Amino acid sequence: MGIAPIVWAAYSDEFATRRKVYLASIMMFIISTIICAVSRNIWLLLIMRAVQACGSSAVLSIGAAIISDIYVSTERGHAYGLFYLAYWLGPFIGPMCGGYLTEYFGWRWMFWFLAIYGGIVFLIILFFLPETSRTVSSPTCASSTIRFNPIAPLKLLRYPNVTLVIIYVSIISSIIHLQYVSVPRNFSQRYNLSSSTIGLLFIAPAAGCAFGSLLGGKYSDFVLRKKKAENADFNYPEMRIYSAWSGAILVPCSYLAYGWLLENNYNLIVLMILWFLGSLGTLIVFNSLSSYLVDAYTTRSASATALNNCFRFMLAGTVAILEPLMEDSLGTGWMFTFIVSLGVISTFFVVVVYFKGKDWRENGDLKNIEPGDHHAA
Image (cartoon, rainbow, N blue to C red; front, side):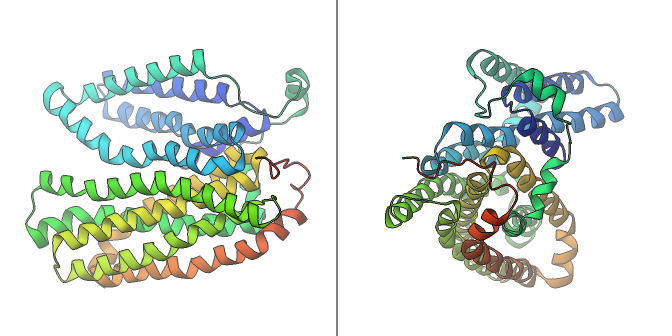
């Protein structure tokens, strides 16, 4: 899920195609899912699960690139909000659906359901999604002159604004994943809640993610349009970063309070409110800065998104593995204090990008190949 999107994105950006990558990746997902459903060997199941993840991983980066292709900058925030809504709600809806399918039909039906769903999506894309890439070139000429580099997106890390934003987004996103992992043990031991009841608690962050994704996207566009009007009807990508400040304040305040109140077994309703607010702030930050990366490098939108997701997933996975060790060593309150402190420190990275990002982009070697749509309505 972290590395494979870089390869998909590299192909999509280099050969100016979204549709082909979507179809190929979803077909990979369908085939591997069917093999999982009929697998009789644990090793085959594990291998196909990895292939399945590779196939599904293209959705985020290519989907973000499609939005970049068809929306002007002042409308992208809301579009990204709708797009990422499904992604952030998936971890909450998936376990519930999977639980019912497993209980009533057996675990193999989880894979059959996913294969059927993937098939429907494949047909919709095949018949209704045209190629959206705005880069026009001769296919014959392109295939003969372009040398495919599967790790080309990593070159974007040469630009300080990309690297600093990705570091910040990865740290902020890791806070919410740390919190997810800590929930089952803490709420079962501290509040004697059953597994089913703990599952219902996830409604709070799901609602926070939903509101953050939808409202954050609209707010991001609103801020960009306002800044554009104040700047003689001219906008540049760094203006969008301004919309992330509210989330950047909300996230550390919410999760710091959550960690210490949880350690002291505080009222459950208060904890759920803080969880909701933390998720809300996370999505405001995520949508604003993800949109910024795409606005800043429109012809490399798939690569920028894939790179952002790669580092997010890797750090989230690392945090999930280390969470039990950190909580046992530091305690719940200090564990959240530690990771929130990292988030606060990294906020200054984004402040630097807000003031210096425009100069970095204009002095970089991508400046002549990023057409953008700065004067678009």
